[in-house]
Length: 311
Image 1 (cartoon, helix red, strand yellow):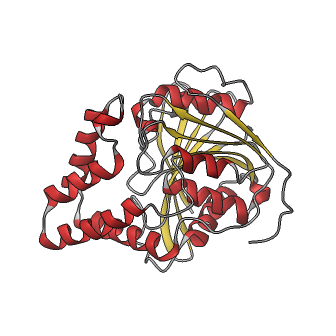
Image 2 (cartoon, one colour):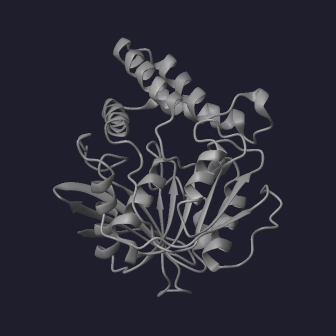
């Protein structure tokens, strides 16, 4: 493991770590607050097109009370290319390699989209390392519209149709306007379109491998989960992983809550970043959040815990 100071602010220290797991190099970013040096950190696992810098705007809400760790796992962001033969087990174990290598026996997890599936698998394989979990826009099955989109994206890229590819990304990850008001819909559409147009050949190769990974391995393997607090949520107009999917994810845990974020779709974390970061902070701190006005009804799900077994 190599480490370098990535930057500092008046109240934070930021370090970047180059690590390697099973021969694949990857990168972690750690933001610490001197106020709480020994607190349990929050590990954020983003979706396939997100990287460890996606969450910079969320960090200030969390770092006053804990450290925040973000990561480009093998196959994503600045990390080494990862063949699609490696699935969720490998990625979950890479997360465990990271947190133990950074000296943390237990962490709070926040997983978004596919990152939520990695977080679920981590909790199954390393339950002793989990204090609590937030899962945003997470599903237990590969959506049919994603399968159809992958086929279309592959053909567009084969033809060199970057415009079609970028437009396809917008269609897959944002809700149609007629569903209801979505904050920053146009901003998110422009961001996704630009991202699709600007992807390098290496990034497109990694994107294609991620899609192949999802289709080969799926996004969920059944198995017991630890009896830890869990919050599952998504945008009220999410069409990629609809609210019913998040409610089902919440139902996997003995103690969970489910809700939706008003005026957002699958990209709720980016459409209302300040509010969502406040929600995370309250959840990890164990303070009430049921009455936050940007949330729809918060459902409580409780059932007996299943016995844990190695997965």
